[in-house]
Length: 231
Ligand code: APR
Ligand code: ZN
Image (cartoon, rainbow, N blue to C red; front, side, top):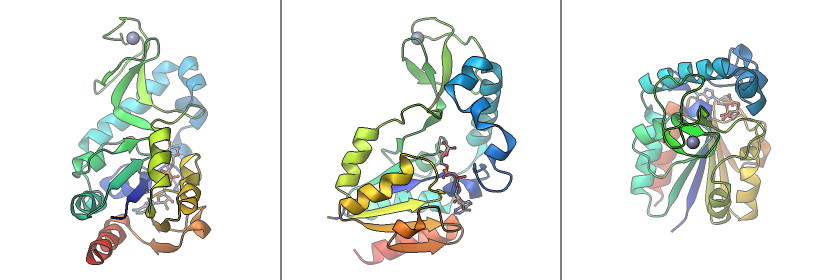
């Protein structure tokens, strides 16, 4: 049965109260990317970076999944083929909404990583400078987030899924950050039908066969109903 690969971005969590990056007043309007989302920024001022992610971790922990998250979980459950969710988001709202096997290509707020030995563990709500790694005891704990200039996670797995996609949907992403913004071209090369569901046309809108614009909590459940109606 047809495999569906879905890429989500910050727009799918916007109605759960989590800020997007590039909308008016978005996170990158408030914080310089180079200070809080690069390895150089972390080396320069780890306290500022921890404070940025502590605030987002605490906010994300209070957020609830919305109708778009739960609709994708319903699609995963009821679609007769595989439904793979790849997210650029570092919140856990897809999982909270019932989705499984979500690939977090930019890492996850609830994760901590040791920069010295690569050990990963559940992050405390607040992480501080010099936090010790529970495995090697060195003071090199960092958020398990993929910063600009670092290699996103699970890329081989993601490209394997895209090569088998019959349907590719990009939801709530502005299509401005690579490699995610190029996934639609991989899907097209695999012969997939491509769909963009977003508040407004993304930078890559011309690559999509089908588009629907509006609030994710409205257009995503409607899209899922349509997909399940055509089983
Ligand atoms: N419903 C649907 N779409 C929405 C909504 C909503 N309620 N609100 C905003 N959007 C759309 C915006 O129109 C925009 O196109 O979501 C998109 C959010 O774009 P960005 O803020 O650029 O977020 P994203 O595409 O996820 O950014 C990708 O950039 O900074 C890095 O690592 C960060 O993962 C992030 C990556
Ligand atoms: Zn370690």
